Amino acid sequence: MSASDQENVRFSKGLEGIVAAESSVGYVDGLAGKLVYRGYDVNTLVENCDYEEVSYLLLNGELPNREQYKDYSSSLRKKRQLDNDTLNLIRDLKDTHPMSALRTVISFIGARDNRSIEPDLETQKSISIDLIAKIPSVVAAINRAHNSKEFISPDDDLPFSSNFFYQALGRRPDKDEAKMIDEALILHADHGMNASTFTSMVVISTLSDMYSAVTAAISSLKGPLHGGANERALALIQRVGKPENAEKVISNMIASKEKIMGFGHRVYKVYDPRAKILKKFVETVTKKNGQENLFLTAEKIENIMAQTLGSKGIFPNVDFYSGLLYYSVGFDPSIFTPIFAVGRISGWTARSLEYLSDNKIFRPRGMYVGNRGPKEFIPIDDRQ
Ligand code: SDX
Image 1 (cartoon, protein in one colour):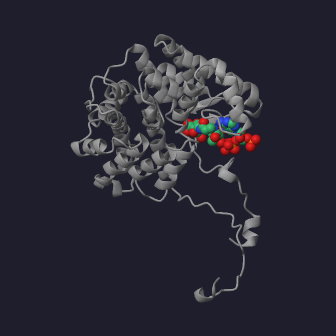
Image 2: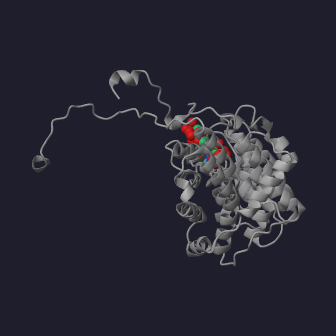
Image 3: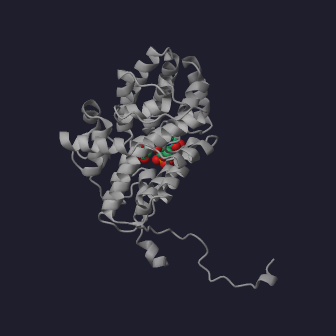
């Protein structure tokens, strides 16, 4: 980039505030604390729809009618089963972190699907539906292997979220648990140009394939500044242990400029609407399971954060209460971020397909801040 070129560009670290694409999939209003999928407020969707309907909505732009819902639901059910090679690989990876295992397994499934080399929209949409169907089974099997338990075959009578719960934990959810896991997955389904979604779009923009885009998105979600925060947020709540300890631990962390996991957001400067819904579930489930102390500790941490950093717009994000919720129904912390991926797969694929339909390769520019030279060239034998 020449010096004159550089005068005409705007640099924003971490692309903060930069618009990188148009989309009609979803909208995050960070000041009003609103999340919208295809025009519907997410609160309306969690109250009235299940994950399969929301997934269809994100992919297709409209909610399904009864017949479309039946077709979509049955095509997802038909594709849930994993083959033996995939299950063997999952068994081999039982001692790796579940997010690393998930990344590897999705890449493996893609490497064996010859369709993946066709960059056309229809093929990539069909792969997307396969991935939406299979990711829950992969994550559930990873959870089983990680805990040295037998794999569980899908139950065709159960819808998406309840079947995931069943395959992962080996028991069918009760009515409240079924509602809880379904709402949690809906709330994670899409969220603007977050890091993992942007990653998937960058990959698809090269006319690569959906498996590669989703494998890259999983790699991006894994980090503690993104989806990996839920596991660490629970670890913090457990370390604090009881409400009386919260003031001291959190003040010390803030004084030493440590980031409190599960708080803050690039877009929300008010309470994350997803955290509000998840918090309600956590309160109910922890009370029922005799783990109310963890909820009260989390709430105390939230209050201290509001007093100290609330004026800076730092509030709980989706990752603060989700981990505690999953833990209270029996999920291991190492599986929290893979559960995030089970929900987010619909958003990754919907936005990647939308981008592919009017594609332009992503290729931003870097601001060169190095030596502009020309430096004197010194032959290798004369260099110090
Ligand atoms: C997700 O983008 C999405 O939509 C993501 C997501 C999705 O659905 O896809 O919503 C999911 O990734 C949620 C975020 C999970 N991550 C965490 O909970 C990690 C902890 N949070 C932060 O590290 C941070 O808030 C980020 C990464 C979420 C946002 O980072 P930004 O926008 O780059 O903000 P920043 O780090 O520059 O912080 C701005 C200021 C700083 O203070 P100053 O230097 O201005 O004095 O706020 C402070 C920060 O120190 N700050 C925090 C804090 N978050 C921000 N201080 C203490 N604890 C925190 N958590």
